[in-house]
Image 1 (cartoon, rainbow, N blue to C red):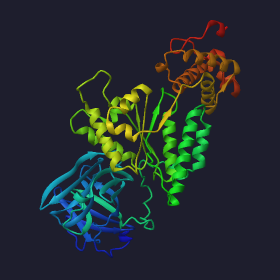
Image 2 (tube, helix red, strand yellow; image 1 turned 45 degrees about the vertical axis):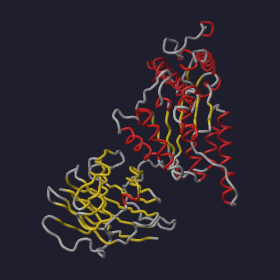
Image 3 (cartoon, rainbow, N blue to C red; image 1 turned 90 degrees about the vertical axis):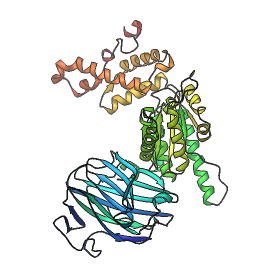
Length: 493
């Protein structure tokens, strides 16, 4: 149900009834323009938009546009407002920061201190701020991505029923639309202004299909066992959905995955396909992929790691969080009695998994032995990650096929003799210690060196060569130096 909506096409809600030299309002086509001209203080404007704070679900949608002013001055949304001394606020600034706070009897109580966010369109720009309640959680979104989640009981313990805007210090800000609903499927927010880009949204996902996901999986070179595991997962989820629709008992379903195997074998690609699969089946709303590792989750000071985990998880919400080399979060073998900040990251991550079990898939990846150690590092980890995809090294002929595709994608032709030499090279590379071989990464690095060497061969006569000659990879273009395994002399001759 729509509780309140104003697209600012007229002044029927009378947000400001009088103007002064310090506060100015101008109604322009489909937006209110508020100018706060004082160098100190704030300007608040509010209306009684209906009491929605006790609803189990609601959605507040506010489109803002900074037009002029000091970039580090805040502006944004007010809710639960009784008067200027008793309210909550959700602010952004032109230099890319956001803040959540409460004013209680005039005292400023920070909930989220000014925090840098790459999601904000900086300087004079359009931004979408959203406040969403989902049962016991209150979530804050900037341009379509959640930046903070907190207890609804705490942040909706309001003394007033008004909703409005606030502008701090010298700023000129336009508000394009304010929309409040109870999040029913029939409730549709106003269209976004032209030029407002939502962050973290992959346009390809909007035109995706289950058939397209399966076709892309089938097109991958090699990975036969992974393809089989993927299809088993797809079939299991489809059957569980059908049983649920028929009112039959369903099995416990964990969306989380463990991908084990050497580098360069397609783990990130498969994780991205898993996100698309979950979206098409209705388990995730967005299905996008956010990649991270220990450096993206662990801070160097007590208490900061949980904040980093929250930031990454918020970006991945309704999609897939892919943690590469996840074992780096747990102690190395031989360490005893030492708990570094990696443990804090694990515990924070487990809490977020519990809080958002239906909105987040986490895929962890790494070498098999190290991943087993990681899964044993915390009692709650293994219980949540019980589905494994085991990746193996590519075979030499599969690496040749990968190299051929890299050549074809960039308009090159791999001659039969050059292809044969590369096959020998891959066979030699696969004899190296397993952990040191990069599989498809090795093939890409080889391709880049081949293209450089081919360019050196044809550069002097390029003007006189045909397109085919400029595009063909010959045996002499295959490098044979310390950068890659040497080819046997019998092969080169």
